[in-house]
Each structure stands twice: as C-alpha cells, then as structure tokens.
Length: 117
Image 1 (cartoon, rainbow, N blue to C red):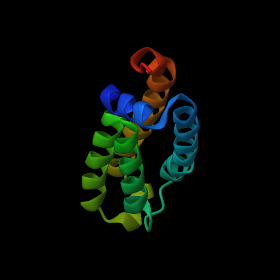
Image 2 (cartoon, helix red, strand yellow):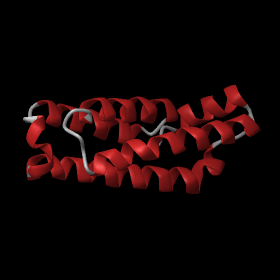
Image 3 (cartoon, rainbow, N blue to C red):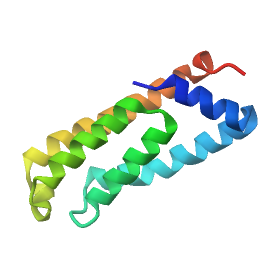
Image 4 (cartoon, one colour):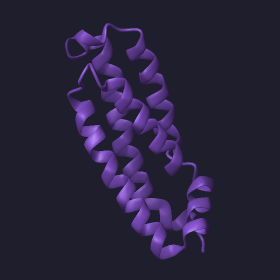
C-alpha cells in the first residue's frame, strides 16, 4: 500500500522536523482534491485525478497512485459530461476515495515504525 522506501527517502532528504512539516502540508493539500472527487466536476476531474496521482507517487502512496491511474483510464473512456450520473464512473471513484482513506490511515499509524533516522 505504502512504498516505505520512498517515505524513508523523503525522511532522509528532509530530516525529522522538516519531514513532518512537509508531509502534513502535502496531505493537507490533498484533501481539497479528494473533496472535489466526491462530487466530480466533469471539466476538472481528469486534472484532479492527475494531481492526486502525482502527489500520491511523490509521497510513496503506491496503491493510491495505481488506483488514480486506473480511474484516469476509466474516466477517459466515458463521456465526462455525464460523470456524476453514471454508476460506471461512480464505483471506481468510490473505490479510489476508500483507497485514499486507507492510505492515510496506514501512513498515520505506521510511518514511525518504517522510517528510521
């Protein structure tokens, strides 16, 4: 779920104090994107998914990045003007949002175990 090697790399590059600050800031920046995806805007959904995927990759949230890639492909194949109305689009987005919640939970609960100074 989490690429702990990537997290360790960030920790080593930034140091303990800055790591916590940067991670908190980045995670705070993700929440508005995730909120937008709960009621996706057909005009911005692809860009929102791409931003979330990029941030997830940078943070080491491997499963979330993979899920974003999958949903990006699904959304590209749909008529995005009817995105809110289709179960075909709603199910993958719902799964992505659940993956986001799980990723945050696992990260919050385990990062200090996996990251060594």
